[in-house]
Length: 444
Ligand code: BES
Ligand code: ZN
Image (cartoon, rainbow, N blue to C red; front, top):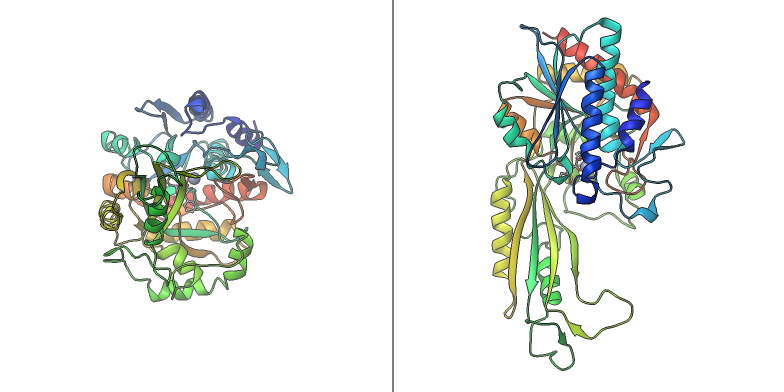
C-alpha cells in the first residue's frame, strides 16, 4: 500500500472519542493501526485502558543509541454540524490538493507522516538510525484521562531521551515551524439555578432572580474593559514574553489581516497592549464555550427558566497552574453570585502549559530537519495557543522534553467543518520525519 492509501484507510474510521455511538470505530481504528505498525516491521501492541486503547510500537532497540518517542492521537473531534461539510466527513475527498476529512490535520495526517517515514526508512535502510517508540493514543480530544497513569505504569518501557510530536500548526504552508511552547487549559461547567420550577415571567417576574440574567452578569464579570481577565490573582506568576520572542514573532510580519481572513470576524479583539501573536501564544485567556437555557425555540415564550449553564475554558501560560486557576475562577464566580441564585461548579479537563528551549541540542536537530524539508523559507520558531496537556506530563513522568514539529497549515480548520490537510504537506512531512530521525541520530 502507498503512504497515501494508508492515510486514507486511517481517515475512514470515524474515531470520535467523546461519542459512545462511535466507540466501535475508535477501537477499529486502533486495531487497524496496531496491525499496520506490525506489518511495516515494528513490534506493536494494543494496550487496554479504562477508556480507549493505546497503540504502542517500537523498532529493535540497540543499546547506546538515542531513543525518541513519537506521540500522536488517532481519536478525532465530532464532525457536527454535518450539514456544513462539503463532503461526507469521514470519506476523505481531494479538493485543490487538500484532503478534506475529519481528523486529516488533527491528527491523522500528521502522525501518519511519521508512520510512513518509518516504513520507508525501514524499506530503504533495513533499520532505523535510532531507537523509536511510537505511542498513539485514542483520548487526546477528551483530555487524555488515561495517558498519564499509563506513562507512570510503563515508565521503564517508555524511557526516552526526547519526545517528538506533529500535532500543531505551521505559520504558513511551506514554512517549517518549530513550536517550543503550548498554552495549558483549565475548564469548568457552571450550572446556575434559581426558582425550583420554570415560572411564568408575568406572574412571577419581579419577585425572583433570573438564572439567565445571573449567568450573563457572571460571564461579563470575567473581563475588564481592556480585555484583561478580571479574576483576582489570575495573572500572578505569568512569565513575561522574552525580548527575543517579541522580535522573532514580529519578524513573521503583520498578523491582523491574516487573522481577519482566517476567522471571518469583522474585527479583532483581545487584551490591550499585546500583538495578536503575543495574545495567542503567550497570554492567558478566559473563553465561554457554551451557554444554554431558557426558551430556544421560535418566537417568544414568557418564562423564567429555573436553571441554565455555561462552559468556561481558560488557556494558561507558563507560571499559571490549572488547579489554582480553577479555584480562583470558582471564588470569583461565587463572590459575585446574586441573591436568589445558587451555583454548581463542575471542574472539567485541565492541562499544564509547556515551554522548552528551541536552541537545545535536540531543538537544533529539529531545526535542521525542518530547514532541509521546507527549504524555500526560513523556519519559524513559535509558541502555540492550543493545548496538548500530555506534553508537560512527558517532562514530569519520563523526564523528556518535547519537540513540536507541526504540519497543519493555518487554514486546516481543525475541530471545524471541512477540516483539511494538503497532500504536499503529507509528503513534506514524511521527508521531515525521515530527516528528523537522521539528524537526531547524527547528533549522538
Ligand atoms: N492538536 C490540538 C492542539 C493544538 C492545535 C495545539 C494547534 C497547538 C496548535 C489538539 O488535538 C487539541 O485540540 N487539544 C485540545 C486539548 C483539550 C481537549 C484538553 C485543545 O487545545 O483544545
Ligand atoms: Zn484537536
